[in-house]
Image (cartoon, rainbow, N blue to C red):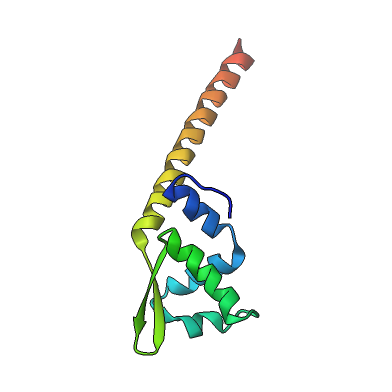
Length: 110
């Protein structure tokens, strides 16, 4: 895996994979054992576990052993950081587009 310098970089890297996004979507409904998470995917359990490892290393999910099963759940705070970054970028681009609109309006009138 290439070097990522911040937790936000790691989160976006983790979410760049469709399998991991599907896992996140499933976990949005609540905690799930790894065996149930892995069922819909056509891959060996060790390969699936690698996806969970990426999600866990960046802090998007946590897992815990309960009896003979490992359960996973989301960590909402990590998603809040990504959402905050995206919202700040959305606002910045909206402001730029607003300024461009004003400039174009003034240019057409001038």
